[in-house]
Image 1 (cartoon, rainbow, N blue to C red):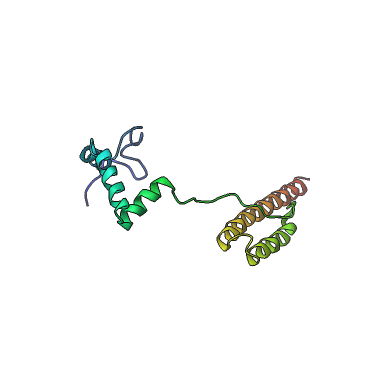
Image 2 (image 1 turned 120 degrees about the vertical axis):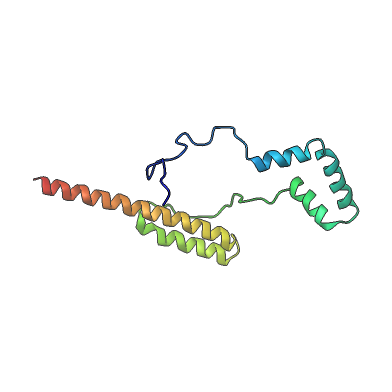
Length: 138
């Protein structure tokens, strides 16, 4: 078994990669494309105009990228405690069932409710522990 000069749990480079250091692959690709970006972009646009659907898709993705998330407006009752969450969940299910929001949007909101539920539970447990500690300290 080879002997290592590093102790278990000790990094060989404790300071990590220097800030601003670029990946070698990225540097190589940039060197290959240097001075060619304008020509390649023009070629792609010309191919898209000529009917090349792949080139057209590439151009459109750059001009009008797919939106990842957008604001939605739905009525959700105020959540003051864990008992309010089932009512809010019902509102989300209703919004999905009437197509006011997509199932994916509903899923994201449900995850937020779950995080809020866990926060309420954690707070409640902390209060109970504090109360028990006060009783035990007497």
